Image 1 (cartoon, rainbow, N blue to C red):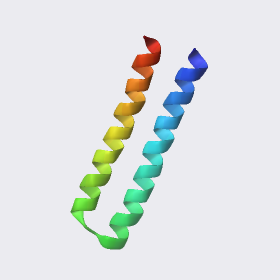
Image 2: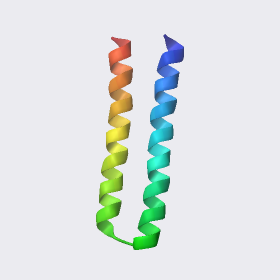
Image 3: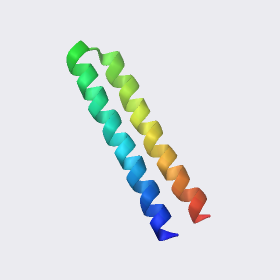
Length: 59
């Protein structure tokens, strides 16, 4: 069970990191605050889903 928890945490962190990198690239190329806000909300959603997976598997 601990390995599943670690895997979910790592996948959530990797998704969040990938989103941050994509958001940074897009914001640098276009320089729009709206894209930065959307990207940060996507990161929050990714983190909350990883936390939800942890809570479900703690269960």
